[in-house]
Length: 287
Image 1 (cartoon, one colour):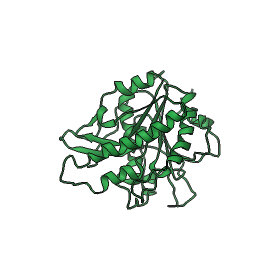
Image 2: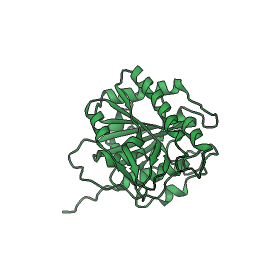
Image 3: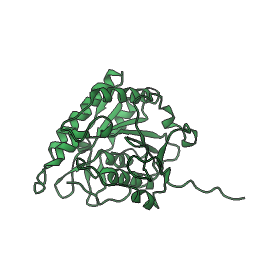
Image 4: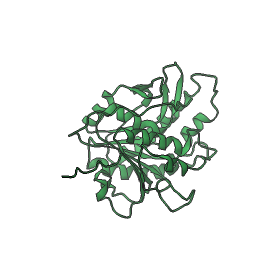
């Protein structure tokens, strides 16, 4: 079951707090969702090198999120919709994916710890997260890298809901209550205005006026079981509405120097194409 009804997380006071980077590698970058059980460990190793470079220069400021790929989507494909715990197999499937990433990150010298979303959260009746926040905060404070993913999460009605990894940043907004930057690596350079295989990227989305972004989405693939790009956009708009700065950009394991991801957006390389989702900058007061 997938719960879609939700409101933006609360907006806490984050002045003076250091920004956390939540970086997600989408499943399409390390898995072919049309092939059952597909998991490209060579691609995982390459992206782990990118994540490791970021982590080592920013200990305590980076959270990693893995997409589910074919393993996660396959676990939801044939579930019994009448069984309130029908999506339970997703728990093991995504634990296996997190472990694959953990092994690769440890191989890069990273002290990584896989964490289960369903053990740290539950879903409220409106689809928002009720969280146990101390675990992620403690892992960050220890200097380790939390490794998260989607999961089966218990709802207020007693049923389990299979949640996409795209929703993990919503959990982090409530759990960390610090300035959050979300970078979602996908197989496209942002939201494309001219459809699949297009070249024109929507550069900015105001979360209060997202119609242009939604109108640019195209149909999800038949192998996708978690809502496709719309789930990603819903989650990022929810986070951005509460103050997060969110980016969708094309992943490349060949670009190991991604340190700019923690720099102000104005300092990013000009050749980086992406979609930025964030509240408008406040207007300067006229004297």
